[in-house]
Amino acid sequence: MLVAAGVAGLVVGCRESAPEFDHDRVRAMSLEISRDVPTDAALEDVAAVVDKLFGTPQSPRWPRPWMTQTAERDLVSLDRLAVAAGGVTSDQENSHTGLYQEHCVICHGISGSGTGAASQFQVPYPRDFRAGTFKWKSTARSEKPTRADLERLLVTGIPGTPMPSFRPLSSSDREALVDYIIYLAVRGEVERDLLAFAVDMLEYDEGPPAEELRIQVRDSYAGIDAAESIDIDQLSEGEQAIAAVINDVVVRWVSAQSSPVPPRPSLEGKSLAASVARGRELFNGPIAGCAGCHGKDGIGGLPSLDYDDWTKEYTTRIGITPDDSEAVKPFRKAGALPPRKIEPRVLADGLFRGGSDPETLYRRIHFGIAGTPMPGIEIHDDAHEATGITPNDAWDLVNFLEDLATKQQ
Image (cartoon, rainbow, N blue to C red; front, top):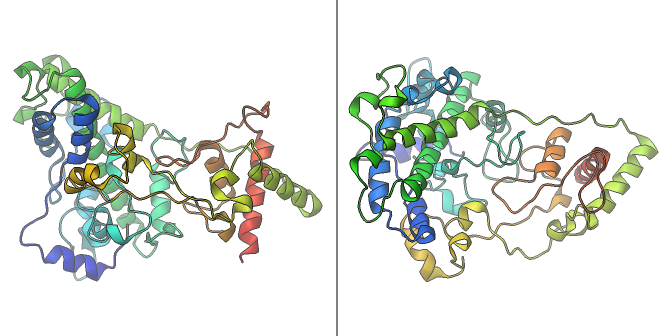
């Protein structure tokens, strides 16, 4: 999320018409290849449903009636969405609306696809929110981030990347941006999951299936003024699929909780130095295996041969070599960014993306980094060499990493 307000205003202000959400054609094309089934009909119906239920960049909707629990319905606030949505405005008190287009769109794009106007010039690429995968968080690898995780990233930025800190914004403006990011992520993941469900379960092929199975919603169930709840028994099979997908996506956001971290041993002097030495041995040894990607003592220098999950979706996972420009070209035309190998961090620089506090480093060792090749390490009290490490081992690794950072100060 990166932009000077003036630049964003210029980009948005020069449009002849209001921007519209793009639909995930890269996802549809990937499914078409992996399932060997045409996806045009599925994409057409799913796109229409997503537009109905989630609205536009100017007038976002939150499909509350399709959600079964109050916590899910209240995950985002329409009032906060209104502050973040639409074009950039300000009043005499310097209160702004259109915060997402003011601060974020130049990198993350209108739909949260990570393909904004400045995206190709950035390393790494801006985050594509639509898959619902976030790297920097306090939760387990497969879980969503908490609201506090997203708020923290807005405050701190991400060191070593173009993502700046938005600390100067008011806390209420940051809260509005958190709501809008969650909204874009839910909208995008619902679209992606509905596409897969339509192809896998509802008999979509070159054309749509029977009416009962189609992904579509009646107008009375579409908008924010719809009934407070929907009678699931009155829904068609296609509408039941929509409800199930929405609830599955939203409940994972509602249930996200920070993973607990065991107390850190209090060490100093020779005890701390011994811990650092043990951490260095683990880092460079076969059990933790960190040096295999990050180089001995974290100095890097090893060739990068892997890609992140966003790239793998339209390349290696469907049998396409990322370097095959002809095979990748249709996906590029559909909106994908050029495949780019992912570079392991040079940890000896002492710059840790996503946070450098001890608890964050501990969790990163335990869970790895979602969406990337970096794996987690099993941590349990009775760890054996072949299966993982103990909590004290993990704290030794943290102490070693912090020692690297200290040497750069």
